[in-house]
Image 1: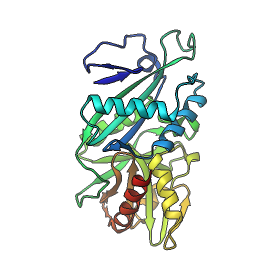
Image 2 (image 1 turned 90 degrees about the vertical axis):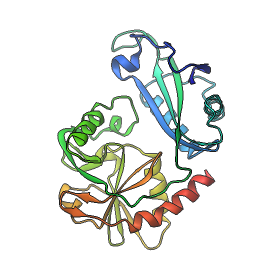
Image 3 (image 1 turned 45 degrees about the vertical axis):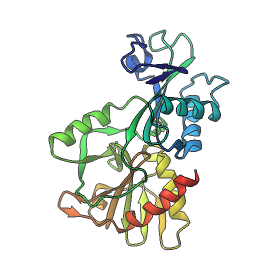
Image 4 (image 1 turned 120 degrees about the horizontal axis):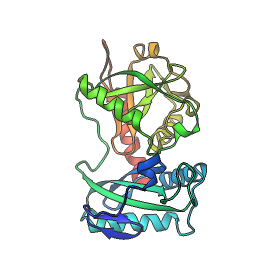
Length: 281
């Protein structure tokens, strides 16, 4: 079942048409959220990011779009799919309503909530190969729009096709200044000794929920120094560890970039702290 503006519909329902602005112009935002036994992980940061992004895109925020309202709608959707006592991936999409060309006829919005089962209850790290390389066909623009989770993800789509064609698990994206910004599906962390780096928002990386949470966790650890600073492609092969973060997987260690292989000790030391933080909210 899919939740469209509060109404539960069958997944094969034709409730959108060719005028949908998310389809026509990418005029939409989304949040991908992990839920375990009806506990919404990091719900407040997700909600606040969505509201902030809607303001930046000049969407009209309805009065009833409160944290409590969306939490109720998410749980209703999970219940309708018999996922309320399981682990689930929830996607909440907000898009501007039909009308107009580039200039919309109004700034009113609609939303869709969909849910799919996940098969892991907690964030975990598997000891398996995970190889990446740079995707250099196209570049990210280092501006505020790149930090938002919009439907304009064609770079990520083309990069994912490139990764599959080349037997890679993921690719790292560059900005116009040739700095490494993020992975196709998450933020990047670089580890050397007791120094951990992650690209700054000014480089164009997504304002990731897990990125912010790990920055907070690492800053409270005496053993490490956290730097938000640009990372060059040359620095990748100097790292002891590289890992990717997103709200669904948590932490994904990279095991190989070109000829360089990496360990995952720091990533493993952080995963327990991340799970504890998720359970607390």
